[in-house]
Image (cartoon, rainbow over all chains, first blue to last red; front, side, top):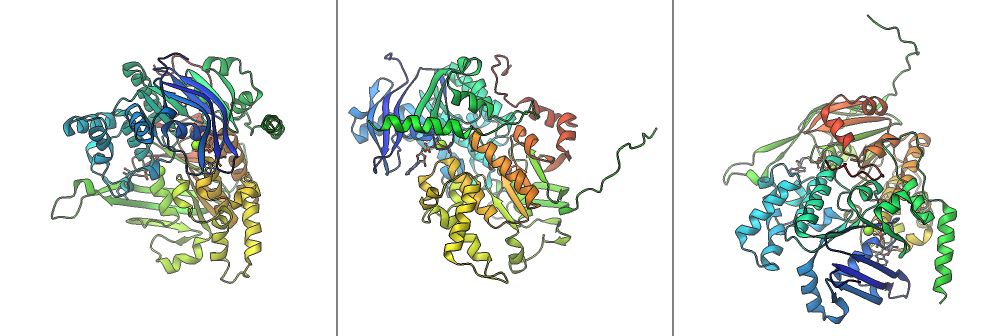
Length: 288
Length: 287
Ligand SMILES: Nc1ncnc2c1ncn2[C@@H]1O[C@H](COP(=O)(O)OP(=O)(O)OP(=O)(O)O)[C@@H](O)[C@H]1O
Ligand SMILES: Nc1ncnc2c1ncn2[C@@H]1O[C@H](COP(=O)(O)OP(=O)(O)OP(=O)(O)O)[C@@H](O)[C@H]1O
Ligand SMILES: [Mg+2]
Ligand SMILES: [Mg+2]
């Protein structure tokens, strides 16, 4: 670990109160300006990693082992209030469920600008200008109208872009992006990925990018963690993942990606035998 | 010079839905003057389209182009300003709720946003079984709770969730698992039509492959008609028979998937195709 890592997760274990582990011995690092993709099937624990970092684990789950360092600060050494402050200052979330994340009875504008004025101490004018600027950069066509709209008056993709703009507005050192482009058409998606790259360069934002789209992984990330049942199966550079994946599960995930370019290629779920084999290996470890 | 057709003309599949001259607008609350009604924004600007029976029709187009609004009109969650929506020849665009009731079990939908459509206080199997109870009370024989539970568990199994998931609550599921519960609930009723609005975009590739082959086989086995709204053109190309491209409330293209994808007529379709990130390394992709 270097002191300068934006995020450093060591041997993180998250368990349900019943003792059932959701994450087991997860290790990963994220350097400033780096995008790390978290991939793996539904239920693998991708969102759970983000929640552990942000301190938003569901009540049924708790961190039962390991450590998280956010910009060098060990989060478990802080009390709850300090921790909330530290996380609010350094990290922002683009949530997986964009349609329920916005407050339905408030207009859009304050939902973006409130955190800027309250947490980051900006003036109202500066916050407003920043919000408009970012709405434009996420390709919202009529930002002034959208600022005054209520969430139900906007399409799914528009709401998702508002959450993206809100997360980027304070230029935080870390963004946890939980499937941030699932509701977007590909042209807007490309624009968003471009924006992430710009912010990466401009302010050194690091992004933990949860996605199931191996095409997006190939274009945006530099590192990849492949998860299965809460374990990291493979941690490698994006280049290595696509040129020389070492774990059979990684190869299976790439093979399961439908390809527009090659419609004749059938794509298939990850083989059941491979899943069974990986499960039995994990079960063996858990006997300890 | 006319080229003679070499292949025999086959009858096109009859349409489950025929939509003619469909218009819809919303009040624009952001620009409402203080003492006058809000101006209206036109969202669907006179659409004509058919959804052939037993086929899957993809609906694509940029964010805000009106895809979800069109879908909501088809299942009559919204009433259009003008135009006809013929379902098996019957215009449903102006029917009131009582007249719609018997049609509703046939028109199922699965939405983009699984969490807000699942009752958080009910176990998963109850959520999937709920519509079975509500609809079986007409002429069809009543079925008991135990049987409904079995049917619900079977529907869950079809979407790749083992029976243990039936005992969980929605908040105990991952995003992809919740989405599959929504699909299970819609197919449990074996309807004639399913509107699927961005249902696989939140799924990992492996569950996506499962759900897509499931939809495909359901469409064939049950002669199910599906309107499949998605921004994922790779998925559309693999799954759908036809595709409609919407742009700002108008139809840009409408044809078989092969036609539209191999020879796109409009720049917007071409732009969409070019922006697809393929799963391979490419330094120049952003340029
Ligand atoms: N509140 C909860 N109580 C119990 N189990 C939970 C809870 N929330 C999530 N889980 C379980 O934890 C595991 C990891 O969930 P997580 O949301 O991290 O998955 P994910 O990898 O993000 O999947 P997806 O791609 O579907 O979003 C899943 O098996 C899920 O069922
Ligand atoms: N209840 C409403 N009141 C006012 N405007 C609305 C309402 N619902 C939708 N709109 C507007 O109608 C347009 C079309 O919305 P719709 O949800 O149909 O888009 P979409 O094509 O499904 O987009 P996406 O891909 O982002 O989901 C948008 O400009 C949206 O702001
Ligand atoms: Mg998740
Ligand atoms: Mg929509």
